[in-house]
Image (cartoon, rainbow, N blue to C red; front, side):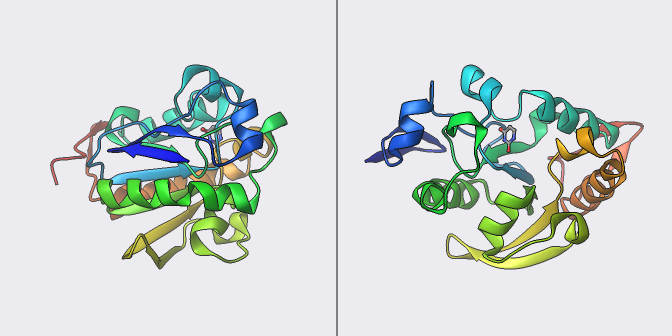
Length: 197
Ligand code: URA
């Protein structure tokens, strides 16, 4: 029903509705040993077409905000809770999230990041296994068991939220600042030194 080779799911038919809708499986991108791992909800239209997470409008917001902290997109790992685009951009169902969880946990295990940053409500609730009021709780860290290991999970607003509500911009910035600190990123004149630590 599904095959994972390293960090990539190469074949999977666990979710009939998503198999029907997807153009391709969208795997995570970025270094396999990244210090920072961002987890979104699932691919949208652009991501489904290009085969890469966060390449649409919310991806531009994320890239720009990372850059403000001297972090290049290429230096972090970005993935999603589900790897196939849900129809009409609906939220993935509990069943779909659970079908894909094994892949996500394996990715987290292999990458072994300093911090897992959940972008928005769906990944935050999925990984913390509770209701999360993201706007209120953004910036807080919880340690949970993922893939048999204790992991620090940092709650973050979804980058797209800043497009609808400008006040979320500072929330996103403060959380990324926390993420950079947790990953030991020193920004030096806008140049990230991620990976040196
Ligand atoms: N939103 C997500 O949650 N994931 C993506 O890959 C793109 C937008």
